[in-house]
Structure formats: C-alpha cells, structure tokens
Length: 86
Image 1 (cartoon, rainbow, N blue to C red):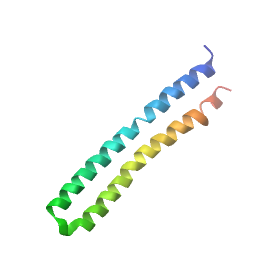
Image 2: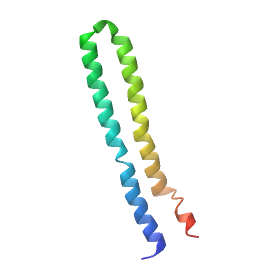
Image 3: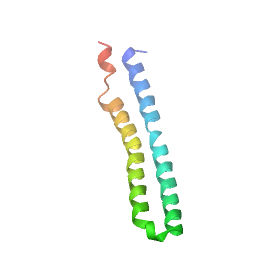
Image 4: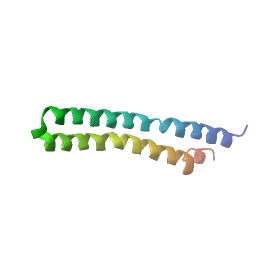
C-alpha cells in the first residue's frame, strides 16, 4: 500500500470522526430548547430574556458542529497531510 493511499484512508476516517461533533451540537441544542420551554412555562413574564439566552447558547453549540464540518472538509478536499509526503 502506498503512503498516499494510507494518508487518504486515514483522512477519510478522521473526517468521519470529525462529523461526530454534530451529534453533540444537536443534543445540546435540543436540551437547551427543552429547558427554555420549561423555563417559559414556569415564568412567562421572563420569556424575552429566556429566549435570548437560549438562542445565544444554541449559537455557541452550533459552532462546534460547524468546526467539525470544516475540519472534515479540509481533510477530504484540501488535505494538508499529502504535502508532507513530498
């Protein structure tokens, strides 16, 4: 097996592992939405503050999934590891 094939295979596995980050972001956003709905149910007067805080948390959680996607795309299409082979 050539070195280039080995690097490409390892990059594909790494890209798949990087996409697991999307699972954590989805779970975190679902948990935040559930707790936000629960908080609005308990204190309807604070809905604006609760929703604003929940959306900020969802945006931060979403960046984790986006970073995983960017890493996967770099490994698949702009692989910097192939340049090290020479």
